[in-house]
Length: 239
Image (cartoon, rainbow, N blue to C red; front, side, top):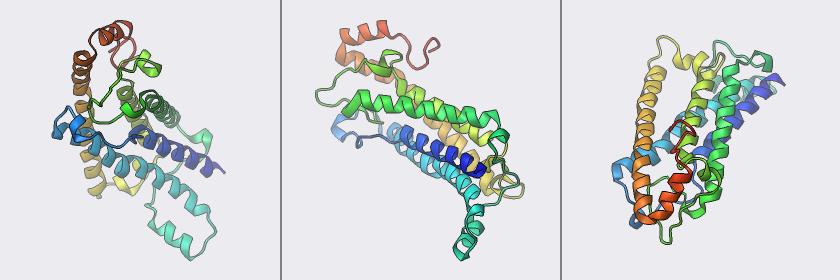
């Protein structure tokens, strides 16, 4: 039961990441794009690759490693147990889980909620690409009445949540042989992710003034009034 609890939390984390990084709409058409191909690759395909390879994979592997030992032992479960990367330690009781794990889960859940609300408010206007659709409307309701770019706030919140869970004591990515001494694959992959995702976050941050300028050019006084009512770009009271 205790292993099931942590596994359930990890599944919730995986679902939260999926919601945060999966657009409900297809990519914007080429005629609607207003950004460069390089920036698009960094901010869209790169985000999706990071999601699949690192985020959801690591959460599901850890959940899997907690559940497999409790399956009825047969040839199939023995094979699964052999395939799951071993860990040096695993905290499976709720009272043993560090606060960082719970805080990370909270951050991920908040991120998913913010992104979901963005999907709801923007509707067809939501794309990961900087684009201007036909009959484009300026959305100023929901989370957009608090900050002008809540989707990016969700992305940063998600990153904090993932790092908190990854670094928490007993996490698979911290305790497993994936990062053990003598194994260069794990540290290399993690280092590559840090560099890559850092580029993604920088690209997203640089897009904020570009998007503001684009919206101001196209909506004029409506955007100026929105900026006056919602002065914060990403973080209320800070930026």
